Length: 434
Image (cartoon, rainbow, N blue to C red; front, side):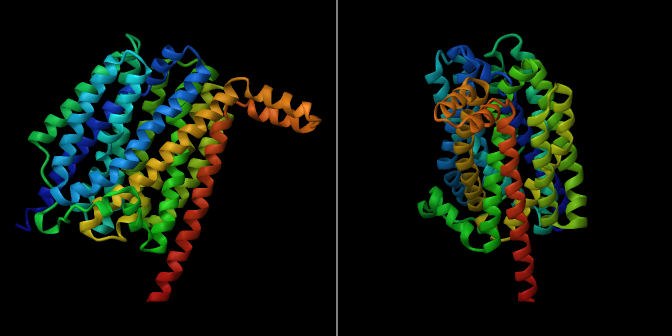
């Protein structure tokens, strides 16, 4: 049996990667059109920016509540049934959003999507089940590359279909999620053997209980903070990018979809090709810090970019961001046992979901101010208070279209600093314990 184990493991990895690609393609299809559909309902670019942030926050809020439950259920019943139910739920949800007659129904669809897309915790736990700890950085890099591959095809397809109407991509997304369900039903094997399962417990399955796991080790807690900041910065794209690109560069769904596909290609190269060698050569910690730092530089350049060409060039250093997530995940999985991998991923997703609630609201508000009349209003108010010098500075800053990207860059730089301090402390503790 041991002679066949590597072949079985390779097949399982292939199955889970295909499932991940199909799920992400479905999500990517709607990215270029959802903000425009919201804009059709409200009739304003600035208001759409704020409401799109609210919609992303609704999605993340449901992930916060559902992820620990789904992670713990997968620890008891296995990964396969959780993934299958989530895929089926997503398919039904996209159909609901395709038919949504108003913002309220669209909001209900985002709430359901937040629950069903929480299966990502199970995908990461699945990969932990079938790979050795020292190989998980590369394995998570492959998942990241699969996600990026989905984002290559998804936004391009969504941008193309969006030219025929903002609801057409939702129907396509429903079909893709349905295909993921059928693929998993007939192909995807179970990864968690019965003797390594853990009984479900509400004490671990609620968000607060799940995150207690992150306090067991100093490095785990520090990495959880880095995880929060990484996701907080990343949501600047989901909250404002589509509207920002349309306002500043005049890009429509097709151009936005093509650009997101380019981002996906770069992520595939970084996570699928570079993560493994970089982690092996420099270690997970150093690779993570370098990735966060490169991402901070790139996203700042995106906010500054005066032309679309400059924005595209800024994508190159920003792509280094892809080095951070797989190595971060690898470092965290080494701190818990096999029976707790689902709980860990549920806790991680809860942390990410907190960021996903706060970040879109924050960046959506920042964008609505910088894209609307917020800068002029702030300048007028300060001038009325006799603060003319401060008025000019605040007016210019709050009228800067790339303000949200500058702030996201600062958040990512803070994550790199905390990652560096956490890594240095962990290395010192390891030397002391030897």
